[in-house]
Length: 501
Image 1 (cartoon, rainbow, N blue to C red):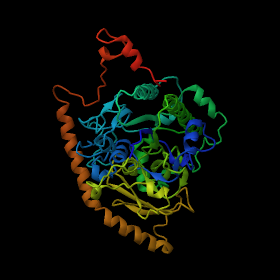
Image 2: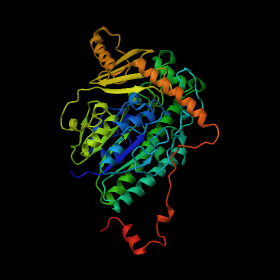
Image 3: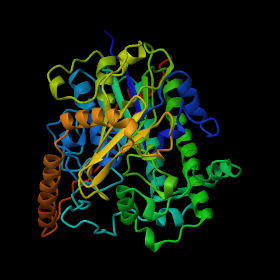
Image 4: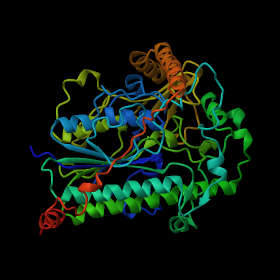
């Protein structure tokens, strides 16, 4: 079997409800719309955890956070957990990352042979939550509503600088792969930080949404006292009492978010153009790590199991997959087994411990019978929360909170909690049994608390004395680039040209 080249395009905090069948019609995203037409689109794909580091570790490994032990944005991703980069590299692939993956710990590669950029977020334990101090805000790194009140236009930001660099390096790598210096198949992961807040966009993209009809959320803000317990914790973690959010600020935040989807579309288009013009073929996967509530119910950012936060877009374009829309719920932890399936790589050595499953059978009409599982044990939680999504149902449980059951087919905005409805006690009992079989919430809580306590000690210790950062430091061998006197100019010019004819 010829192993396909693989291009993975990952974005950050992209709300999956905006991708019911590829990008919504009103979004200015021509490159993603063109990709959608030749892809399998998953209308109901979910994150394994609605936060960056846990969601990404799960996406790369096919395991839930309770298995990876990446519970939050400062939990170490252990080096002995195989990722799709390990599986592919072991099978003979060259593996490369340009952009964000939010690895925490001294291993900043996790199977990637080459990494082209540093990360945008820190790699140490400094962002560790503390279940021993419920309600405590760590102001210098917790989200607050300043991203909403500060929304608007700028030509350069921290985020824009990063994603410009991600795209630049990815395009250079695509050109380099076309030069065929290495005859192995390749997997290139291009991972952007947009449309993650802050909600600030370049004017050329901002102007695209001047007359947009979607600048207010479909579900208006729900008063704090009427929110469910976890949503109240999110409000408190976001320091909502220190801000007076006005309707115009909501509109500006959403406008900038949509604008940054269009910015990303341009960057993705540049990468795809480099692939096409160098006559390279590749399977293409597009996915996000988690979503953004975008003001729905008054909630912003992520950390919630509600659709805006937990649902993500996913599309796969591959020659052997017939373009179609699949509405059965799937997860981005299905990515690793799916990539291995499409590349002809067996995962049987670790199959008993893998949570994700290949979506390839679904594209051939094979029904999926297992529910999608989601976990959350990071900031704004005081104990782990778990969720199961199957058929039209979404069930959530936490030892601190009342259960929730939503019928997404008839209540897509999750307004009516059916958990106490006498007519749905059979459904609740079914989900309770599935959750009890999968999770021991007391054990899960104890493991999170142990991890947090350990990390607080290690972080404090490593900040005393000489500090050695774990952040990835990309190095360039300048003496091996362009033209140097130990090289034959004729060979250099010939090898640097692509396509060859």
